[in-house]
Amino acid sequence: MKPISRRNVLVLGGIGAASAAVGGIGLSGAWTSGIRSTNGEKLVEPKSLRSVNGRLRVRLAASEGQVQIAGRQATALSYNGGLPGPTLFVHPGDRLNVTLDNGLNAATNLHVHGLHVSPEGNSDNVLRAIEPGTTFDYEYQLPENHPPGVYWYHPHHHGFVADQVFGGLYGAIVVEDADPIPASRERILVISDISLDDNGRVPAASPMDKMAGREGNLVLVNGQLGPNLTARPGERERWRIVNACVSRYLRLRLDGQHLQLLGIDSGRFASPRDVDEVVLAPGNRADLLVTTAAGTAVLRTLPVDRGDVQGMMGGARTSTGVDLATLDVTGALALSPAAVPAQPVPQDLRSATITARRELTFAMGMGMGMGMSFTIDGQRFDPARVDVKVQAGAIEEWTLTNTSSMDHPIHLHVWPMQIIEQSGQILDTPAWQDVVNVPARDSVRVRIRFDDFTGKTVYHCHILDHEDQGMMGIIEAR
Ligand code: C2O
Ligand code: CU
Ligand code: CU
Image 1 (cartoon, rainbow, N blue to C red):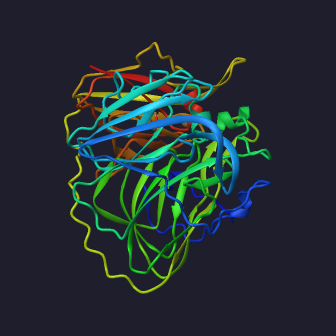
Image 2 (tube, rainbow, N blue to C red; image 1 turned 45 degrees about the vertical axis):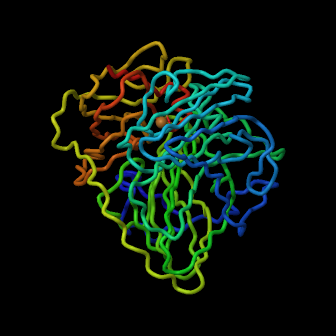
Image 3 (tube, rainbow, N blue to C red; image 1 turned 180 degrees about the horizontal axis):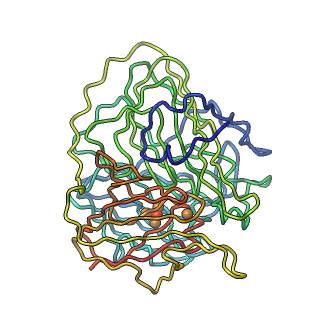
């Protein structure tokens, strides 16, 4: 199996039919001893919690304990005793209150990934640590014009992020549309990976796994291994997909079914795009319409070559191909669904006046006796230093350059990025994402509007092992 070049793949979520010959690897390749497939079990959705009258109040208790993973008892981390945590459904303009109980034996905190909310105080403030045995009340006020879409939450306490996300702490957030999109079914698919040893525990990551970014040997959909979905032919389903993996890239296909991509992250296209596959770097989300055709289809991820740790034997990394779920489509033909309503025209900064330009360089290197270093502009993360100062309201253009031999998916909190140029190609339509892959030895140009909020927050590589080792910087908007 020949992994396709990431240069060609990662331009956008939607790609043509250039890769038809590549197949998936059977699930059995991904099992470790003692793991039982849940293949054939019905897909279980995480619990849904919905806002009422503009408010949603949620308690999330993070703890380590016994959970069901891939059909057996395991010891892992979870919010409220199951993984993924509950899905939070809110509307633009809503207020979300989350009480976080830290029942772990380490500090943690909570980040609402992709939400356009304040980074200060008790809002999306990832610079605050919530100590073990303590509780903290977060409050997020969504603006009235918050973009609808798929978001997610996860811990963000520097140095512990990869361990805590890999261990099981994540959940989806949906910001609902003003005009609902007609669908016979809406599904949440949180895709995550984890490793379990013979005792059902998550083994510690090796030094090489930390350098390359750990990938689990089980790839789960809503905590299940190989679940089954059913539908009638002619239905339109809406799938909201989260890549909650620490380092694994997903290249999703569902051959034989008609796929239309509504958007990636908070970026909604003017009209749905027909796609054969969807590529999600760690942290990215897809909002996907599936129009069903009779037969059995396999949701699979195909291999993605994400480069290598330069100069290290065994440092090459390819996110493997794995079958994730099956979709059985049988029965009487459903009535054709109503048309997808026109989507709001996306914001476009291509002709905007730029107030500042910056270059950020992401690098990996061997320091003298220090092991591998992960830096931005030559520096490791320091919570006491502000790396980038921006004017509130500014529109900036950033060139993200990756000098290393591995891909880095770059993420900025609070403000989404419009991709202008990727791997030398100028994009001809607006594409807004909050995680943008920067391929090895390549660069990407983005534009950002620093609107609505001030305060300090972070940008970082969303291979969370890299973030924990220092590939993160602080930005302050004033
Ligand atoms: Cu999904 Cu700063 O993170
Ligand atoms: Cu984030
Ligand atoms: Cu990285």
